[in-house]
Image 1 (cartoon, rainbow, N blue to C red):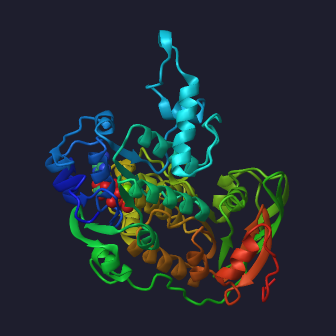
Image 2: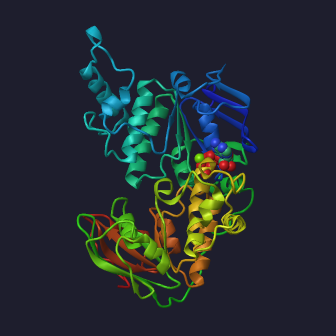
Image 3: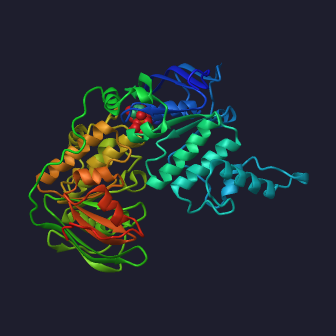
Length: 505
Ligand SMILES: Nc1ncnc2c1ncn2[C@@H]1O[C@H](COP(=O)(O)OP(=O)(O)OP(=O)(O)O)[C@@H](O)[C@H]1O
Ligand SMILES: [Mg+2]
């Protein structure tokens, strides 16, 4: 409904945190029956805008209107009551309650004598899932639900509250391809029912596929709003970054040297089996496979954060003690983990301390304030970390900038072998190209890189060799020339034939 009156309208909305102007002039006009993309670099102010719409932050200036009526939410509950729902990337559900109880928490339908009407609740939940076209058991506990299913529960909850505006802040970052397709079907259903959907993503192919309108933000301000059909991805990138972005996969050819990492017969009962491979100095080896195939588990065991039942890991000729990450770091191994918040970043500490923590500890250097700041400045500069100040708390940084800090922290240890697990998840296109250039350059200087990524184009664009993991086993090894998307997907998918022609085994 391109000419319908706006359901949500923001104009000139501003928000500062102390000296940091997170949002200078946020403008967004979303009409009913529309899926509206919001794109921009890390730190552009997208999440800050969303938090103002969702009642998490209070704006300093500007206008927010819902159905033409000015609103000023004092908290998330007020936003919800007014019909605005924010679906978080990793929703916080209550694991001990059932799916149904999570949806109706705090507003359970009552029977006589104020007894909770469990049947009405369950029927309601079932009807919600039916209307969304998803197959979820309302009686199962929320514990153990995938992130994708937790998002669906949040959407069901939003609809049961009759939310008319649904905002999704990077919902697809941690989803598999199948889960993304299901989420898109649900989002289209919401659009067709006349609701307004705001969709944030760093993946422009998703924007082209799902959205009808796109708003670009840069440095906390509105840049442009267009029909998706009227603007090319290259043009969007130019507007986001403010310049042309160089090649996304700047692969530098390199001659592999000595074996830097050797994994022999690694075995973890029920998780992965008989995993053997080598990575040579100067080589980038990609670990491809479907979400859940066991790639991250293998990486964690190699680094020593998880134990294994058999096999061994050799780094630079030294056999590593199982389950001892400190020994792995001392031998020259580094792991940039998949989940930055749980595993990689000392979030409550300053950016400078985060970046320098492992490197300075390893050199047993005294933590001179000067050394810490210098190391941090160097790496933060190379990765274009956008932080108000290096002594700021890392929790206040945007998602993508937190990811860069984790990368900087491990690169500062000057490892011989670097394992990166989803290195560019949540990172904007401009910085993504920078991260790729950096990895390619480090490999050309002799670093051995093992790269896990769910983005097939990233693995194929960067790797010299691709190992395909399926159900905890390495089922194919393909050299760069043989690693086509078809060959990798065929090997990665259970049930498909695993024959990899032209492999470099
Ligand atoms: N609570 C806070 N305190 C201080 N600074 C903040 C706070 N929240 C956000 N910022 C800053 O505001 C800027 C915008 O952050 P925001 O999270 O809105 O970016 P974003 O566009 O969502 O980025 P990303 O793509 O990385 O998620 C960043 O520079 C960030 O460091
Ligand atoms: Mg964000």
